[in-house]
Every structure is written in C-alpha cells, then in structure tokens.
Length: 399
Image 1 (tube, rainbow, N blue to C red):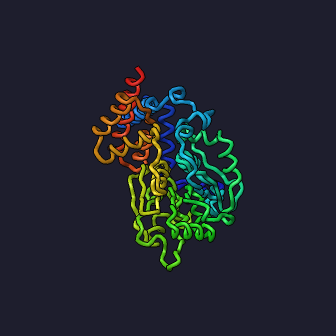
Image 2: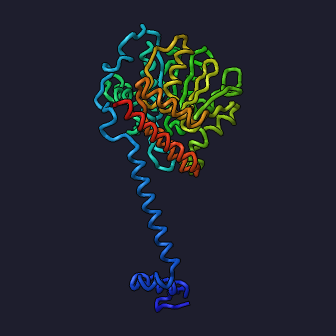
Image 3: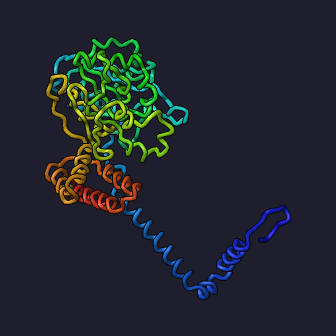
C-alpha cells in the first residue's frame, strides 16, 4: 500500500498498472517488442472496432433513406379513398376511451395514449359507417404519445383532421357517458391506461352495461387494463374463463425492465389473476383474441385487425382496405416466425416484385435489434438478412 498525505490509500497493484500504462504511452515500440501479446491484443481490438463500424455503416444502409419514404405529413382525410368512397350509411356510434394520465405513477416518466392506436381504429369505425366519440377519465385534452417512426398516412391524416382533433382535444368525461348511446366501446392503449382505467367506476359501469347488452367491448395493448376490475350483475368477473390478449410481460419487461416497480401490476399477470385465459402471440406482432362480444389485441400492431373484428362483431363485413406497408412487413415477420427465412423471402418477393406492394422494412430491422437485445444472435443475423433481401426486392420493384 502507498499512503498519501491526505489519507488516500493507493494499492501497490494500481501503482504498477499506472506505471505500465505510462510506459506504453511514452515508449510504445519498446513495450510492443517486450510484450508481443499486447501487440496482438491491440490489433484484435482495432480489427473488432473496424468490423463493428463497417457493419453499422452497412446496416444503416439497409434502412430507407429520407427521400425513399413517402411524406404523409400534410395528407388530408379527403385524400384517402378508404375514408371517402363507399362509406355505408349511419350504423350507430362507437366510443373510444383514452387515458388521462400524463405520468407513469410516481416515477414521473411521461405517458399518455398512443396516437396510432386511436387514429387507426377511429378511421376503421368511420369508414364502416360508425360515428366515433372520444372520452377519457378526466375529460378535456389528454396527453398523446407520438412515435414518428410508426406514423403512416392515416395517422398523419388524423392529425390534420379538424373534426377528429376537436374530439381528441375536447374529450368527454367518462362520467358523462350514457352507455346505451353506443354500439361498442374501444379502450385505446398507452401506458397511462394502467393507472387510471382499472379503478374507474364509470368505466366499470360502462363495460358492464354494454357487455350485458351484447354490445361490443374492444381493447388493445394496455387498454385491457379497463377490464381487470369489472364484475357482472351475477357476481361473476367479466374476465373469468374468457380468452383475452394484451401487452405481454415479455414485451413490457424488455422495454421497461423496472416495470414491476413502476406499474401497479403487469397486465398479463393481472388478467390471468382475474380468471382470464391469456392468449399470447409473437412479441410485437399482430395478435388478437375474439370471444363473442369481447375483442382484445396484444399490442399496437394489432389495432387494424382488432378494430375490423369489432366491426364484424357489430354485425357488418368490414369494408375492403389496402394493407399498409407496416402491415405487409408484419406479415413477413409472422411468416419468418412460423415458417422460416425462405418462406419469408418468397413472400417479400411476391409482395414487392410481383404485386408492387409497399413494405416498411425498417420494422423488420427493428425486430432484428430486438433479437440482439435478447441475446439471440442467430435470429438477429437472420432478420438483418431478411431486411437486406427486402431492400434488394424494393430496388427490383422500382427499376
């Protein structure tokens, strides 16, 4: 040990290490000759850094360039044929409920409702002849969460839709809702739903009344938090023996490792504890559960299918809708999950080259990064290869 005048103790091994590093800096040639292993270690580290840099550069080149993706920021609802052509006559009203929470409990982390989970369902209902009202626990203007990378034409159209924006910024308090006015209620996701949906008595009353009247109950992602404390008039829990989906423990904990201390509960655990049969699909891919007049979706990528299934359950065949580039990428990922890389590549080729469809390959790349986060290196490289193939087919499509 070496004792300094101010009482600080420096172990002898630290002094030796400092001297060794000093010699490397001042006499690099002599040190490399004296310690050959040091030379090869430095060469190995430098090579690894260069390989990682080169791979990162190549990987970023797989993603769409700024001018390659369509600019939907100014699109109006009137420019989307799905919303303007062959819209059925009035079929009634649907209520969409969003969270009023602005932080994740005492953590202080910001939250709100997910825009894409509202906008896409909102337009599915409207395009199929249903007027949509928007409510929240507190009423007024709730906080919205917008993920720029997930935004598509319908999401930007919603932001540019003066009527939709008025409803979204002047939501009705759930306490003022008359359930019998609606054919269905849809609970929009967003992590805030975990905090102000479960204990809200007005929400519980609304769900109970609509469900018992054979009206449709829908919820996506964290939206099923609205169902966890609903008891029916016969004393039985709404969820008992019902097959439901929602944001899974695996999806939650990958994004927020400390979720158990932030949220009042993990949604999957709570649904199961209340008697539900939880149906879990692939991570961050489309998956819904449909049991009679109860329709639930696992995550944001389930919103389109969940809303259209609600239309089915309300007694109507959903209007034809061209799938978005994101949905096509989801189909590729689901094929990869179930049938492997070759089938997924065949689907990419058919979609992009033969049918000329759009595909958001950035979503495939994201799933590759998720695999890397999970330590699944084989899957990571498999999905990177799939992203590269999608880029290649995109070039063939445009040539």
